[in-house]
Structure formats: structure tokens, C-alpha cells
Image 1 (cartoon, rainbow, N blue to C red):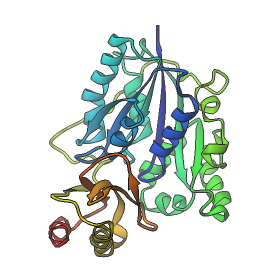
Image 2: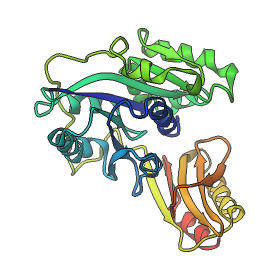
Image 3: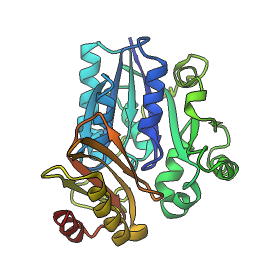
Length: 308
């Protein structure tokens, strides 16, 4: 019996994890779900958030996407299949991974007869769609063009950008279904999981991505990551001060900042994806911050960090 697999992809900071949380909330108790989480960096912030909701999460961190998919990724899927304690599998790839690579791994010779790849979803941030198409077209276009469903995010924050984002998506994927409503207003379970919505990606197994450790990976080369660890609690204001200094230092080279940091009264969740820095109280404990960019001045980041 094949286990249904659904992929929720999207570029860095698009809102994949938030989308999955809404999806799980709407379908709570209806299925045993396992999430395969492939993050870019030493610590999987997204896995911490999802685990706090009581979901089975298999973390895959560090390393390039093709190495992970070729090794740990398939092993994790095979372990889930052997255990047979899940009804479906959700895959949340790294924001800098190619959706076509994940599809290829799921359709590999070892897994093609065990998995039923039902739906590929991509989350697109309407506020940064045009920018990311210009700057990171290879990744962005791949995620859009291989999806059956596209959920637009941040529509409430910038409604005037919705039409342009829809047009951009249509340029690279004329046949996908696009939803621009806030997720809490959408029947996500029906749109992602239902038989009528699901699209079977059947056919012969496709060629898997190869990995040559002795050369730079074309798809991973534009991005670097730096993870900073908190030695002791600091006030939320102190954390914000140093993070804003780092954002100012990096400028447009910085694409994403996320993490959970300790304060004297608890923890805060930090998010940045090119817009405003947001900090909110967190019920999930953590002590790290991950920065992702096209280049990072890591020594200066660490110097700023020590000054907090």
C-alpha cells in the first residue's frame, strides 16, 4: 500500500511553516501525519515550531539539498514506511531547494512503488515575488513551475501586490490553481488532501539529482548561512538591537533571519525576510538565531553578538 505524500515548498520566509500549522489545525485528529523537514542551517527553527504542536517531525539540517535528498531524506521516508504508523507524509523542503529535486527523490526507484506523490504546493510571498524572480530566478521559477497549487502569502499586508504576483505565477505555471485568500479563510485540508484536489504524479521514475562533493553545487552556491547561539538570556530590546545592527550591516545580501532566543521572562521568536523585523513571545524554547544570505560578514555578526 502506497503512502500519500504532499510537498509544501516555497522560498525563504514565504510562510511554509505557518501554512502547514494552519493545515494541521484544520485536519487535527483526522490523520496521522509525519513531516519531513529539510532546513538550511545548523538548527531547524521550523521543526521546533512544528514539534511543539505534537506532530511527528523528521529533521534534516545542514548539507546541500541534493546530498540530503540522496541520503538521509530517502532513509527517513523508508523508515516511515517500515513503521507504517503514519497515514500521510508532508515534506517541507529548504527554502533554497528545487522542487524538481524533491519530486525526483520521491519518484526514485527505491520509493516509487511505496509512495504516492499526490500534490505539490508552493507558497509565494506577494510582497517579494518580483524581487525574488529577479534575484533568484532559478530556484523561484522551479518551485512555481512544478506546483499544482500556489498559495499566496502576506496578502493582507500588501493587497495591491496580489494581482502582479498572480500574473508572475501564471507566466511560469499557466495551469496551477492559485489561492489569494488568508489561510484561515481557506479549507486547506480539502485543497491539499482531498481526492478531488490531489494530482497523481505517476509515470516512470525520473533521474535523481547527482552530487559531486568535489565541486560547488550550482543550486546551493548563491546562499550561505550563519548560526549564532545565545549564551545567556537578554532583554527583547537588546536582542532586537543587535539583530537590527546585523541587518543594517548586511543590507540586501541578507535574505532571511529566524530563531528563538531566551529573555529573562521567557523566549521570543524572531523573524525577518527583507521587510520589518518581527519579535513575538514564544512558548517554544530556543537559544539560536540563523541568518541566510547571498553573502554574510560572519566575523562582524559574531562581534556584534558578543557585544549584546
